Amino acid sequence: MNCFAYTKKGCSALTVKNCPGDKCRFRKTPEQAAADRNRSLARLATLSETMQINIAVTYYNGKLPKPEVTK
Image (tube, rainbow, N blue to C red):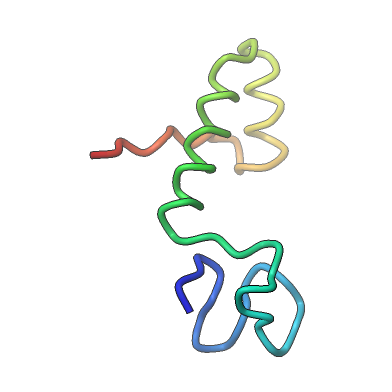
């Protein structure tokens, strides 16, 4: 299974015991998941500094991550 959330213990994104495979609506390749994360972080970077600080404190232990550099 080529999914970002699939581990030896099963799905790390959903609370299901058996992976639904190609029928899963959350299925993404690791590359797709990284691209989505980078788009989200780039969007966050366009927000006001106050909003970024609020989001960082609420969701990222006070430090907003930077988008990854892609090759």
